[in-house]
Image 1 (tube, rainbow, N blue to C red):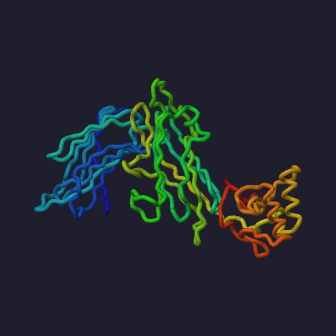
Image 2 (image 1 turned 90 degrees about the vertical axis):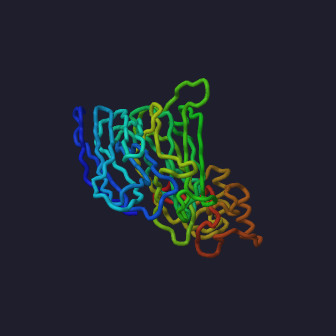
Image 3 (image 1 turned 60 degrees about the vertical axis):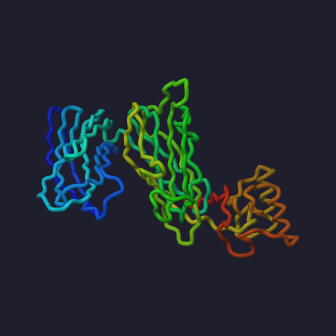
Length: 389
């Protein structure tokens, strides 16, 4: 679907110090088939921008959509106008507009559609452009690592009564293990309702994007009696949630994986939204990214990480376990039996291999170093491997 954008006349009445308010209308091309439902009308705010959408409008096929916008204080009226010539045909269109530059405040938006449709009224909160933000940072992690945490941060100039968001991810590179509140401001103030949905490709996907997983998360701070009105206080860059990924080790990996905040995932669709004084506020989105690194190469049982396995390795490991010796440079290598733990059984496994024809799991000696085929919570902490989670 191609979208056609027009210039628009803005009529402003009685608003002091508005500055540059910009209205941008848009219309789709004629939709080829009638939709299942007609006339869905919504008004939302994302960041500090007001979005009005009027989907599947059945009207003149020569439509030139140039709505008129009237502003009187915190009352906004949007009047849909067709300035195109009459034609002997009708069509379905998706219509809408954005309004940028409104002063912060609580607005009543009235939409007066084309004749034959009843007008609709919405109440919205318009924040300052940087007043409400949801963001994730850049994180570095080894491919094949489980439990990689990407924090979610909020900037909010007013207390939050709740929030919700959705994220998508490439199934070739990751699975979503969890979204939680550990160590967050949300946990400290006492969230009373948490809803989590994860689709790692097992279910019908929304949107149906091949090879893409999704997850949604929603929190309400005060939902149980006695109602004490707890909120997330106003703040800048507060940690409100944690995204937890199990990274895959694909044959042809990319160097990074996006962490985008996405509206409308799940059934019913979950928006990216903050709740302020009982009203929806759409935060500006600052998407994150996971920079993917190849996992370190090692030889299983090489506890001192010198490139070969000898009798020095069980001694090095025993000294670490029971004699306050140094931490093995590569914990995965010291995990000789590959059970995800470091203990006496690993030293015994090395001795059995060296002197009793015991078996060491891959990447086994005496072959070249390799990747861990069974990712676990142990990894390598070599300084030359670069940034780690």
